[in-house]
Length: 378
Image (cartoon, rainbow, N blue to C red; front, side, top):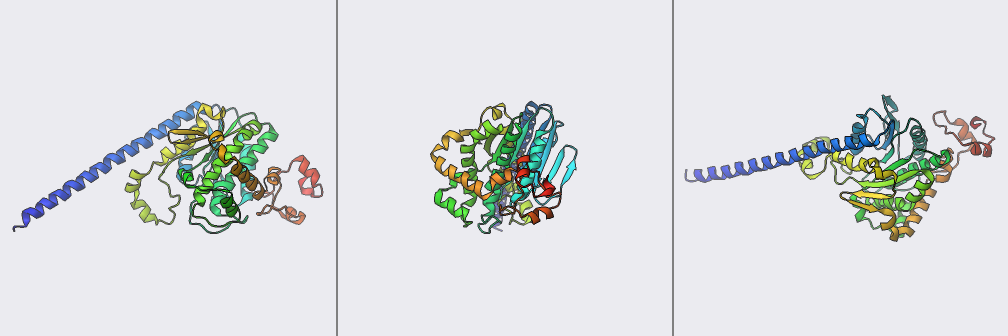
């Protein structure tokens, strides 16, 4: 009986602490929900001022996370048409949104997607033209793709590189009148990268690295720093990069069981930004007026970095990076629309004749003359 008052006091303290914790979480959750709502309103306001008469937007990695949220937000606007590159999904057309299969681990898939994206962006009336390179991969080091490199490197850097560079060359050939803004989704983890020539050589050989995610994201910025000016002047393509911050997505957390992921929602609401905030951070650099008057800008939180200037000390590494990426993707051949094997080798005449119409690409007149023995491409 003597211990009863003490037990009641301890219970009262526990209840008070628990009530306070629940109350604090409710306040924090309400604040996070308010931030998400504000982000959605800001995105719609930016869209209203940027779309023009006929806006056309291409988004990669639109199956989940930031890409899916951004697609849903853009689809609400009546003047926005979309192409969504999604891995593992069938081609689908619904109103102003077209889902197109895109596997960044297959360079032929990227080449086909680039052709369709270019045609889509060239069509329509005057308005916004925007590409968001959003697709990303974060996993334990290991494994090689068909071109002999890490899947993380191929999805995070090589795929976006090939897609953007093919678009730039096609736009240059077509003398595209309307400017195209490209936003690469970067990561704050790039600050952890120790990428140098030796590590780049190791990545080219497919050797696993504990920092390959950070290295591949830094590679995006280095590539942009040395190519942004040429892309703008020759392809009327304005490349930028954006860091959405720590957003509540499953990137790098695919190993977490679905039931545990749902149970962790209260914790994640306090720790990470919402998908709406991430979508705003990614889209905003391509929607502001300055997006088409400047190039090579990196938006990270409240800071805006000029990649062309601030990454100048890394220019030698950046040039080598671009040279390697051009070689491993067979960029020049793919820019002509030439069908290649997965490893970038030219196909034999027999293989070309065996291709289905869906797999065929359209070669330029010059390319047809070079291979006039292949009658089906005349």
